[in-house]
Amino acid sequence: MRFRVSASATTVAVITLQCVAQTATFENIGELPGGIDFTVGHGISRDGSTIAALSSSYFAYYGEAAYRRGDSDLIAIGALPTHQESNAAGVSATGTWIVGESVRQNEYTEAFRWSEDTGMIGLGDLPGGDRSSIARAVSRDGRVVVGGASTELDGKSVGAPFRWTPEGDATPDRQRRQRECLGRDPRWLGDRWRRGGPPRCQQAVPLDGGRRPGHL
Image 1 (cartoon, rainbow, N blue to C red):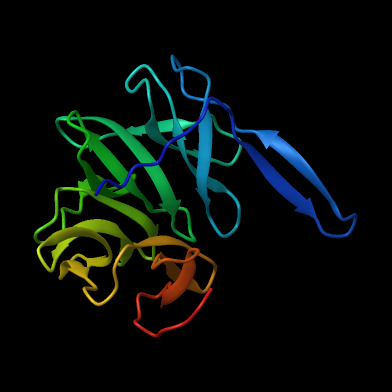
Image 2 (spheres, helix red, strand yellow; image 1 turned 45 degrees about the horizontal axis):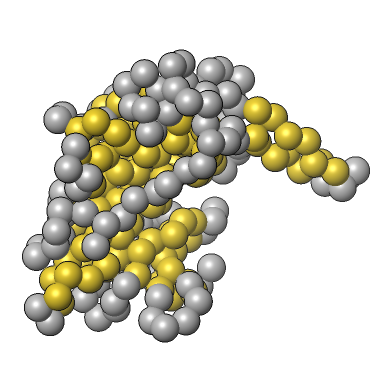
């Protein structure tokens, strides 16, 4: 079981909705220096000021986690030690925290949490998995991260959602199979669930890190 995000050769644009005129404008957010001209936006803060993205660069030909604040250029955030690539998959409502995956040379992945103050911190793996995890969304204060990871269930490696906190590390939900956290809206962090049907939201976690159930 591997959690990877692929990207085609493209450059992302920010869509700004003008509610009164019912029109939309597109803004190119650019790319990192030295890459192959692709950028994919994967998350945006609640006020629209911070964008989390994947962009090719000198450092990582196939992709490096990056962010943009306001009108600045994209800024790369690197990868975990001994890793070669990374991907930013989500950003907190305030734009302070970015989460995603860092990729080892052998294509194993590890979820991370990043801020300008702390740098990139690896979140580890679930017990019994094959060293594959990705963080998809993060609470407003950065203390709760949710995502998908491989774990062992009935003797098999399966995908499972996880909830990470600084005190408890990654905690799996072993009652659900083949689920992966998908994202959030201003109220919830949610996941999608595959069991022979289309993806659907099955659980949600409020941005304050609570455990109330809900649907997106």
